[in-house]
Length: 284
Image (cartoon, rainbow, N blue to C red; front, side, top):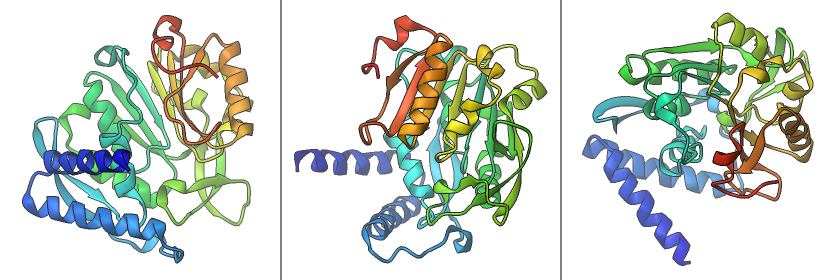
């Protein structure tokens, strides 16, 4: 009970701080309640493809900017996860010195904006397969001086280049790549191709959230991993964790868990810098 009260006030103060207008504050609180009620209801048939986003005026990096978020498609939940709970923030990393970040599964751009705040000098590559998410990714990141070196790519990331199908989910951030050719088709790129096309000699961070497709990514050609210093990845199953942990530990990384959703599922950080990774969490 005490934890829920603390969360309530922490979230409320966050909303007040981030809102750039009274209208945005009330809309944010109202839609947050609507989203929470929706997630707890047994009737969850609302599809993200039919929902128009709300425009919010947020305080971001000392400036006010428009951010577009859908309520029932889950964008508002991702916003809280990234900016309030800061689930992708790793203490002790030299974020300001990062030169290159690859955001795989960029959704509607919240992580790109967050990484741009932490690493204003970095080139950020944001890749997203879902066309509705991609449209909001473009709208949310345009004209942002902190991520002026942003490149957005409409594609899925897979073990090889080609084409894949994807399947929409009730919550837009759960859209996933599938092998079924009856799904919506999208171009796929390997991380080898993605990194080679953008001429990177070193990648400071690769963030991966591809809804259960992780094992396929790690079972393919993984030459790209030799250029990577840090990985932040959301794991969705034991199979995906096994593929991920086997590959990265054999490639000189150590692993720490950043969130604890279940025993296996959650967000992990893998780093080549053992001294840093020993500072937080505990190994798996």
